[in-house]
Image (cartoon, rainbow, N blue to C red; front, top):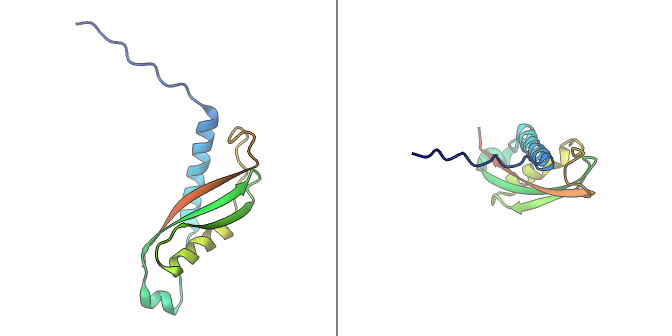
Length: 115
């Protein structure tokens, strides 16, 4: 039998790797600071669900704007997701990520479950 050499490994793209790592850090960070809604309404309804939130950051990490991409169908959870994004403190983009872009739009899923 003839040995077939393995296909060459795809070339590494430092910019793509930096972008993927940054997005991963954003997702982890936001999930670490999210808080389930409190108050009487939340304790009575005990909503659960996922909100897909979008937000735009400047290269410096400053938040430009944020909104709901896909609702959880609970105003309490959607508001908690927006509050999470708005209170976040974000790092500047890596130097080689999104070259030439002054800002970038991101989306993150935030899952909420009552305790």
